[in-house]
Image (cartoon, rainbow, N blue to C red; front, side, top):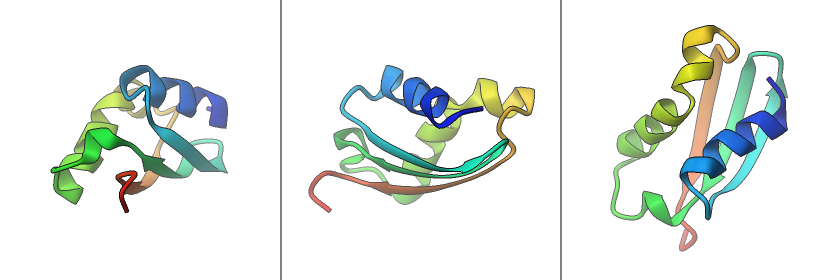
Length: 74
């Protein structure tokens, strides 16, 4: 999986998202800033991203993923 694949998948669901993946192969740390996270707990934000990336996680294209999520106001 490439950085661009991750960016495309997330921005397809969160069009305003600024996505900064860091990693290679199937291991990534992904920083995401989006207004869609406003009012949501950190757990809810991470669940949103897990749902978006579910096909890649289920297939094994992504394996070890961690998130740094923020709203534009943070």
